[in-house]
Amino acid sequence: MKLTKTPIASVITGFVLSISALAQENIQSQPLITDRPDQTESPNVIPKRFIQIETGAFYNTFKENNIQTENYTYNTTLVRYGVLDNVELRLGWDFTEGLTTINSTKLDNITSGFSPLLLGIKTSIAKEKGLLPEIGLLGHLYLPVTASTDYKPETTSIDFRFAFSHTLSNNTNVSYNLGAYWGSDSSEASYVYTIAFGQGITEKLSAYAELYGDLPENNKANHLWDAGLTYLINNNLQLDATIGTSITKGQDLLLSSGVSFRIPSKTKK
Image 1 (cartoon, rainbow, N blue to C red):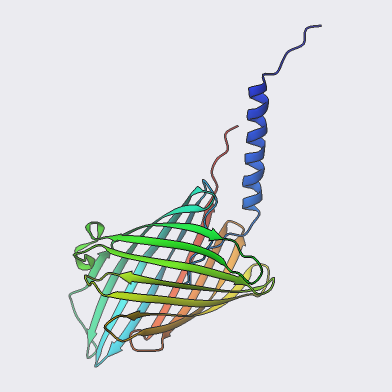
Image 2: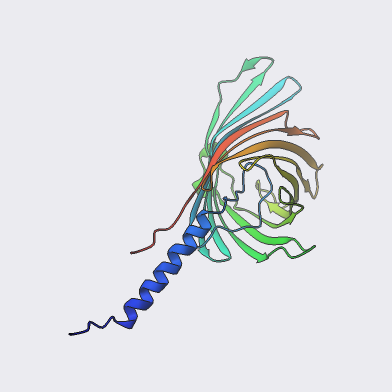
């Protein structure tokens, strides 16, 4: 009887593909972690060769001296792609419509269009260990050439943040960011902070409360808060809703809702 030999390369290839499929299955069994709906960015990165899309809409309004401004942002899409085990690339773009009302009369000069395109990168620096938090670093460029006329600055904006997270229990955690932002056609740096407390209510429903703001070098500080809920439909799909306002002047009301989902890479057979 003639025996058919199996090439070693085929065995190795099959083994590698099996391990890869098992790894993807393991990742998909873990609930996704998002950078929305709060202002606090997580230190987590997207798994290698996975895509995560986080999108939604929000409304905010502010009234001062009989002048009310309203902003409707219909698209707040952030696309995240894992390129390495500890590095992700980020792409974001918003579409906004702004309305102004003076003494209950709406003005005709409505502003609308895309904001500057966001290009960014995030890297994981350290995993949580004991009292030491999980740490990540992220940064973005905001490209004026991609913006609509109404929202087009003259110069490129840039920001960076260190992101931290502590697990307090199986159902609670606290996360916070520290960083800086240069933009709005100004050379002035604005230092940024956030701190968010998260609480799991059920296996699928979670709540959070957050304090955040910025401290410009030559202007008054801005402090705001928000709170919201997230609902995990499955490990790759999450809904969210948020309400907030400002502590200092600048925002009377913030309303937001959105959806986030993860797309796994395809394993070749």
